Amino acid sequence: MRKMLAQMIRKELMQLRRDKKMFPILFVAPIVQLIVLGYAANFDIADIPVAVCDHDKSEESADYLGHFFGSGYFTRTVEAAADRDIDPAMDRGIVQVGLVVPNGFGEKIRRGEATAVQLLINGSDTNYASNGFTYAVQITARYSAAILVERMATLGIASIPGVDLRQRVWYNPELLTRHFMVPALLGLILMIITIMLTAMAIVREKESGTIEMLVVTPIRKLPVLAGKLLPFLFIGLIEVLLVTLVAINLFGIPFKGQGWLLFVGSLLFLFNTLGLGLLVSTISQTQQQAMMTVMFVIMMPFIYLSGFVFPIDSMPEMFQYLSKGISLTYYLEIVRSLFLKGSGIEVLYDDFIALTILGVVTFAISVVRFRKYI
Image 1 (cartoon, helix red, strand yellow):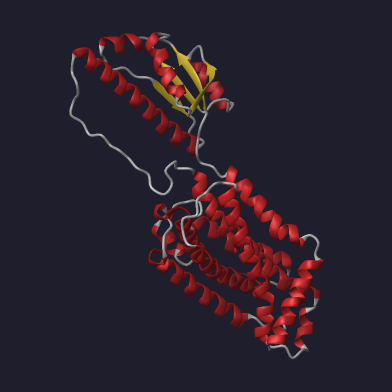
Image 2 (spheres, one colour; image 1 turned 180 degrees about the vertical axis):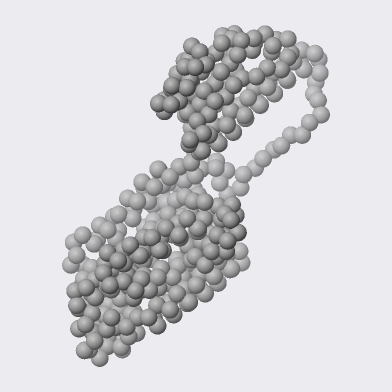
């Protein structure tokens, strides 16, 4: 049996080697994907283009605008002579935010009266809208606090009672999207490579008729399965190493956990993805059908419901329950925790157990359906 298994693995590796296009797909494309998505998948907003209409043109309005654009979050792109000039610039996408300083702004501040500025935000892009609003509120609050402190000093008041909120962000102090997304891309890349290649490799043999040659051989089902899946398991582990090295050395993302936990977690996740790929191959008759099944039945739900982009806690309760049946959900928790938190097995124990149970169930269903004479 061991000799049969070795021959099956050798056969699969020879097929991969003969395909000149397969090597770039297996090892170059994932790294390119990681680099592109690592830089492009960024929710950190800076240099938001702004149209400014300063009706007051006073020293105080200039000081306020100096604070506003000195923050680095906004860029003064358009100088509007009137309020109505802001709308065309926003319609054409030249600016995302409009800022209107009214007449009397400086005079009211000098008299110690409350005043207001108008903030117009393009709500068609919720990321720009939410971040732009938050940044504007923070900048205005700091400017108002500075005015208050200056007025208190003028009146001889040393201080007033208040609460000083001193925040400390753990695990990702700079709140960089990259640190959150790049480790998760490891799960996405493994899922794409292993599920797709496993399903396509078996279905390709069904289409070409070579699978029928196995029917007349004495090879049992187990060596056939192992010979088909073990090469992709090895490839998946190599992908883990490559992606981890790129994440650490290129993106500067710290890996605070233990390497053996990443290895075991990846092994369990690959157990799930290879089982899914095998399952797809048993219900698909053509490579095109297998590809469509993988894309729309497996990958899309996995990406949407696993917490890859959208927080699971913000989903409706029904979808939160569905996410518990997705192996990527637990693998993302393991990878992100190992990279950013340095969590140990005592914290990730439940995720490892969940991956094991899902893998056993998926693989069992796939093996039952598999027939060497499909």
